[in-house]
Length: 224
Image 1 (cartoon, rainbow, N blue to C red):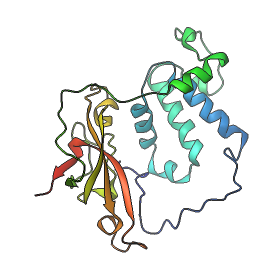
Image 2 (spheres, one colour):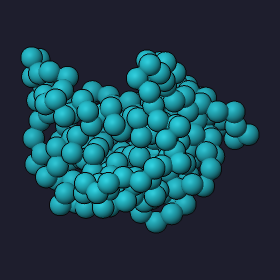
Image 3 (tube, rainbow, N blue to C red):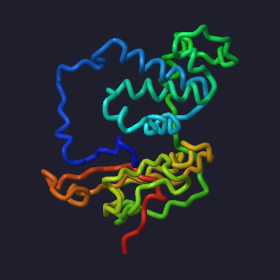
């Protein structure tokens, strides 16, 4: 995560404020944005890592001014055109042409079953886990995708080069850095790693607080 959305602890953004009375969807179209994004994902033309990367690819100017669900809808529109599912003219209101994916459309009576099934990312892997609970580790100094320049990664910039300790091994999971770019799932061990706030930020309000991040093995190095 090296694009504009990698905002954790960034100076000047202010506190995250939560209104206890806020509705799940503050506007009606927000629910529709979520629904159409999930429905489009059921067409099987991309995975969750591809969709996350599509949001990262929004221009910094748009990312900064768009609301949460505007980001979702904009990235979805880009994916639909990129994958040839719809044309730009169709998005603009032109008469749609019949789609060969029509039989994959998510019908209302299947929504509950599809959502309940979720999208598990745990997989068998030939990559052996090298860390155990309690091991001291540090993250790579450069929070970049090693497979493709500017590619997707789940290693946040604010945790790059930080030292923490393994608190849990989740088993092997799909590696987003590979999956987002069509290089295969490349599953590898995934760990929950705890970092003291003082290891992540120069002036944390509560230095002894901990942040726990789920990080893939290739993001980590042992601490001697």
